[in-house]
Image 1 (cartoon, rainbow, N blue to C red):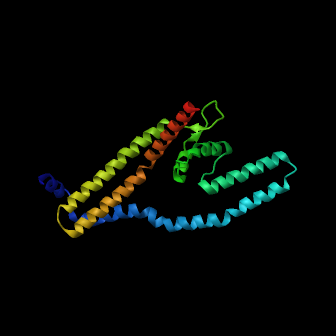
Image 2 (image 1 turned 120 degrees about the horizontal axis):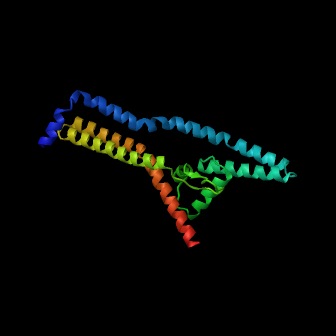
Image 3 (image 1 turned 90 degrees about the vertical axis):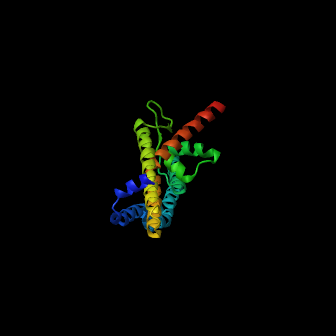
Length: 210
């Protein structure tokens, strides 16, 4: 309790509402953007059929040209894959992701995250999951920083709740919720890294079983 009182002595209570407001706004930022993102998504859904229909029309007119027809078939497949997964990529990477998803354990957001790690190793024309040193560093940084933010939010909540005032309790709870939401946002690099490691392990297991 003495430790709590000492910490409280370093906090000027008049700044608590301002700090809480900032943290809450940061945590609510994705929610505030949601209507705008929904509008963009609706726009995409409305116009997405036009490219597909245009490609199909071109394919029918190019039926006598086998190479062009094959190219258009690939373009149609890539466009359909983009609509279904939200991933714009090459044919080789698309086939790699589809093969990886055969076990049905990957969600759409997870596949989008994995697509960031799909590349071609030096001297190879086959896609693979690649994890660079910088990505490992950013993963460790995001995990540590996210934990620090969540810990600070929890400490802030405990400090305010210890005053036994309903308003301060609510402010502390809001600050904690905001810090957790912000920590989750920061943690995205670490989650992407974990998913890439999981994908590599799955591929190694399949290769050993096959």
